Image (cartoon, rainbow over all chains, first blue to last red; front, side, top):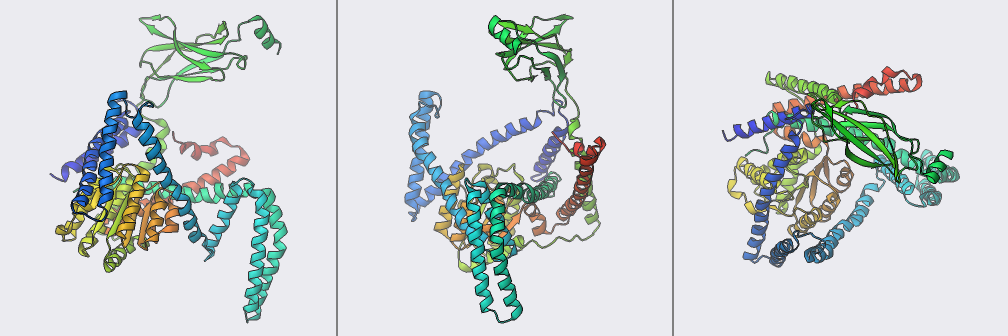
Length: 261
Length: 377
């Protein structure tokens, strides 16, 4: 019974929600909304469990006098202060987040928002380090990624198309220098021909490539985003949603039971 | 121009709207009527439109009541306050200063609820095909047929990651992302968590699971407990290692980053639904030298995971995790069925491309049949 009852509830709920998708007539029409309301009520109660877990976790650290105990003291005291302050503002203004509430003005605006912004802004540095690793042209795939990322970035930033000719010019000159150096160091004649040929092609391509990018870069960037990128994304979406349907059917039929004790 | 000049100078009433049409909103639960009209020719200079409504009570039309006032340029609205089975009619008043003119009455309309959403017929048909294929393969496996599933590197690496972490004497960190228990990626993440907790029990390594959502926290605690029981070491389960961290996105990211830096886990599992915090977590994991296995269905976050973690379960691979790890025949059958549906969809897409390409040049209307069929509201 410990497993059968939850499985039956899952089956009935899942089946009803599928039916509700196709029948707008009441009582099915508003079923999803009603189920969502129930979920919000249940999750509201579990928040108490969450807070209990958080406080206990940090209380244990303080009790054991662990190295991080001072942080736990800060967390618990902040929790108590914010809760008390919120209740006070709620009673005084009818809403803890009322514009006149000092709770909103001081804590939320001057502490919470800047802390959130700080964490979010870290993303810029993390993107730079991750991009450096991803864009190192170690193979064909990484090189393609580097080229397409370069096109999209230059095509989307202000003055990108003006900078693009210089950018591609410098890149091709560097490629020509590297090819000449590689060609000199090679022993086999055919390898020398390939690298010197590549250097010549790079030099010849500078002006046509610069001219093409100057007038077509934003269009090229849009093409990368709207055709290959969107196509790949849609392919992923189809796979993801089919997987989700299969998973949902496994859950409804009781094949997938990980969520059960 | 002359007319506009005259209206502005001599306060002539503006021209009324025409073609006021009222109709029941299709595919709904009833109680709604859609009203559409042709804009007044003086739309550019009028102030606003007022829509009036009348209902029939015991064979008599009621006094007109104001339904709503809309600004110029608006030519439709939905009356959401109708009673099914009652007859309604509408007219629209065009106002310019003190002057106004009324349109003729619309046709009589009646709202009603529908028993089937016709625009979702294609979804129903596809669903029947999908379920039919899944049930067919489930039936096949019940008869004893073995099904093949390709290698998924990220899932094969789970045991290796736990083993490596044990060798280093470091704990494991499992992050379920910001999804709620109603999100399928979270449930998929829980099935991977069960496997990791079982292995962690076998290898006697600590497993830390900080949670974002309180409902997920409760489910994760039960899942880890079950994993330890399955691993034969329920005594090693530490309730305090699975805990609720924060219900704020960046608060959670900061908390998990702090745990990574302080506890230095040997393996980090990022499995679930992630938003902007994905790269903050993955890069911090990378900086501490942990082996990282990520998995998400959030397409916008996948590139970050691919760049910053060692193995990534891309989209549907995550959903296949529980079938792959348990090798359960019934679960594998659903994966097989899913693959067949994919083949079917590829065929439909190719057919759609051919039909639409021909229709583009020949303008034959019936060639849009597939496009129209799969347009869902």
